[in-house]
View 1 (cartoon, rainbow, N blue to C red):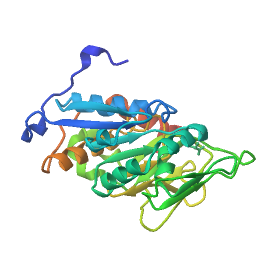
View 2: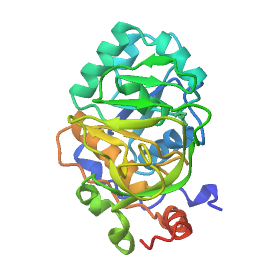
View 3: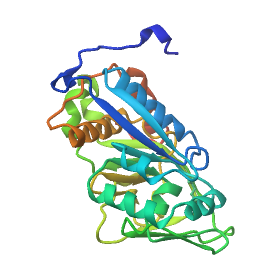
View 4: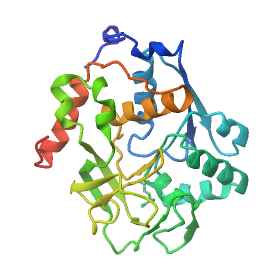
Length: 283
Ligand code: GLN
């Protein structure tokens, strides 16, 4: 168990090219859209920034939030939810907000959208009782839940990533540099997502269901926006993904290249490898 005084770790702030860097992370619908530990992604991003002297401001964008708040964010996060909460959120997401979010996605503001949030970025989500929840139409995909008589896609999952994690390799301690090609997590969704031509899968499923349990794709990539079905939360067990998001956000806000200092991720790696091992995949 990590004790408080083990923090901060290895503080050689190689983001020194930027004087007191700061990131504003927008957390969309923290109360309604956060299941299976998704809030842990915010804590992970916050800590990995603080351990590198990067100041972090978490902006809670809850029901009725004001568009101007959204526009101030350097990175966005939105977690998963049950069908009921997704309906409430879709009513709160006004045209103005959708327009602002689309502009930020098109402009390359990094964002991580988990499960129900990922579905929401698509054209629509047909939920378990057949109701069509209109999506934001930002990502070229749609999701259909075949209904209660069909099994939910549940369990641990590992996918080979399509993200160029090699770009952040300097921030990965040497012993682990070979194991940053995949991501592990936990999935639990009724919806099956199908990707269109304008988005790339985030990864290829090695074990688990992923987008639809049929085409081995998991998640989606569009510019610097990433959709994924991986809960857990996803980032603590895949610190390379967290660092990739932080690096993208810093380089978007300040001029690249910005390399992050390596952190002692031995515990995160053990957790990552434990899931891979449980799925019979050696990493
Ligand atoms: N309610 C959606 C589904 O079942 C999303 C679930 C989730 O976010 N975990 O597919």
